[in-house]
Length: 376
Image 1: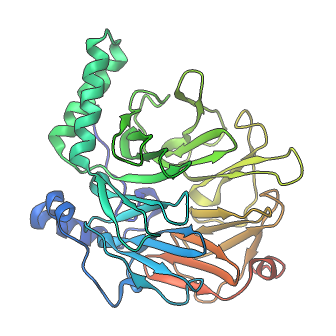
Image 2: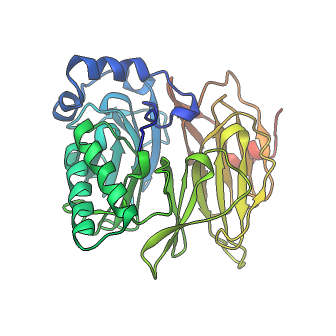
């Protein structure tokens, strides 16, 4: 299979957030992925002003991750930040904190990092060299056991990945608890761990994704687990077959995120997928059917967060924000002073924290008040 260009340094090529691409290219030309995988992130007084691609809640703490292995912590809702110790300099793309203490970060060069102290210190659990090797071994076993033509094609792809080296990024992670989780990324890269990252299983051949489209996001709704990806790809885990089976929608553009929207006091829960040019779809039947939403956004929606009380916040590549207070049924666009491109969002008790190519920014305005005063 012929390889397409990899997603950009800031997680997704299609997002257009390519500010850090030249830095990544320079790092690669200087010595390749092996250097950044073995070199700790440098401390920087300006780390909160550098490209940030991910935000996550670790209890009351906020954790941010981005370019050159930078991970930052805030214990005051994003007003001030301190830098964590990180053992790699790879660009980081996503975070998952199933508990306040235990968290995971993923990124370029096949990096998976883990923390057990709320993000203060990190250790490397996996990199692209090991990830490529375990996918190859899994496909070799599959073919040796009598795998079909599809398995043999995937084996050929796994061999090419080993030859190319650790150049495939992980683009998202989701953990159900401190031990059990998935990481997903470029060209259908998907791995599972049940022991906190000590060992990993390849799910490379367990997706209805014959074109090996990029997997951009993974999120749950109840006991269902959804993946959103390139070219309109939407998948849901089938626990019976232990595969991610394809879902059908009328939209063929890329989805960059997916959110589970559990219902607090009604059976009307939902799944929201969002992506290019402000497109977002909502399903109330676990992906069997989808309804297009009017988000009020026109640029690619790069990130979103859902709160327990039914609010949903979406941000886009142009720096615009849209907020729903009815579990994604309707959205109101929020006026933002001096908008800049955005890649991540986190809702706090005092407002909204935003992240992107220009670093971190706190919007000192509660979501309830922001949503009741929409701007154009």
